[in-house]
Image 1: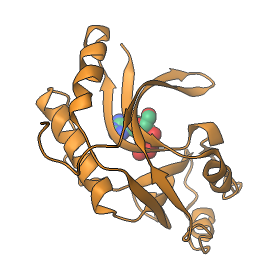
Image 2: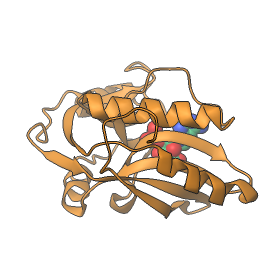
Image 3: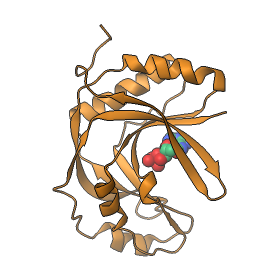
Length: 186
Ligand code: 2AM
């Protein structure tokens, strides 16, 4: 069954900037530049026969374009036990509302969604070993991206194929952000 997620892609130049944040931390796996993205919603495994219908129905989620602005470095679940290192995005209302509407739409399609509020972030690294001290020095450095802003012009339905060499992300369909700021389809 295809494993799907919906994300915003980043320009190559920004992905390269984010990759320059990489530092050697024991047990860390840094996301390769070509896979850095902002996840809006995670669908998980979806029956092959549902994919085309879902991709068509997602056209109903129209939204206006907006800008992404970087905020700060952070980690999940806590600084004492970091497992995921990320760079956060400022809580732009159009971004938050797009993620909320996509999640609502997926719930209506019986695709369970996390109840936790959306926390916009780009995962930079995943950690397999405890490395709180090394992560603290990574997290405490000043972020040189605070003035970088990215124009979000589309969201993308991706398939994620998990392989021994890491995940392979393939865009299945692109959805331009050209509509209104929300609400039901006309
Ligand atoms: P994140 O790491 O940016 O939070 C593709 O696998 C994307 O889907 C990942 O980048 C991850 O986003 C998100 N994802 C993967 N597994 C997930 C899960 N079990 N629950 C929620 N999101 C998940």
